[in-house]
Length: 340
Image (cartoon, rainbow, N blue to C red; front, top):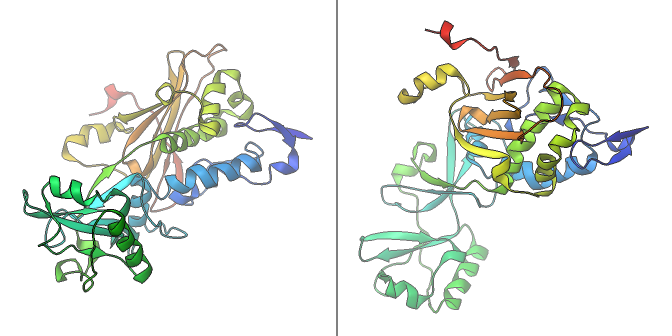
């Protein structure tokens, strides 16, 4: 018996659909009942591709991936570096140092660790600026930009001798002869790293777009059914998710208002009624759309198609994934005129 995959659209043997598919990736928690599951909808090949190329980074190299540590969701292993996130210590003795959030094992807290880097004293700001190895400018460029590389100490941050030697080779390639001094110690103010404030820059790219769209498309197939998800109107977004084809702007949007009406009213007070995941699905004219919010942080818009050619069957659904109780519950639409 043959089954068709909702992503690659290929007819494959039933045994090639051996894995169940979760609407919300397990890196963001395991929920009951069933985490909303798909059976015989995503082939093993596509499932493996998404695990290795999309969900791995969605769960580790996004702000949502960092927040999951706070909720006690432990990663299989800590990422070596972040491509899409850059965190720095904003004040104190280590101001400017680049750090990576780490799972602490304590509910509601994160640890931080420094990355491989070097600091250069900026004569104009009278502060140190830190650079990862690939970002270290040549000696002439550093000097021209007002950095002191001769008379000021250059902190070298490395976790072991191998990292230190690799950093020294970078310095040699950049026209600098630097000798390592004693390791820089964490001062007392950041010994308890989970109490240290950090500031960060967040980059959202195609991997994140496709990962969020996949969550929404899984939800579509789960709520309306595999047959409906295989309609040709959705060929564009399925190719975008699986193969990265097409313009992301056609399918993905950021900075949407909160999904819950009460959260919108409390937005100015920076208050939210849940830290759980939220997802909704419905029509907007002849467009079928979804809104997704992981940990109720940012709300993303996913547009499945602009003009649906078939009969507009009733579709209006929403679910809440409670990260504390691990329960999944339906959202209920309420007429806003009835709200206080």
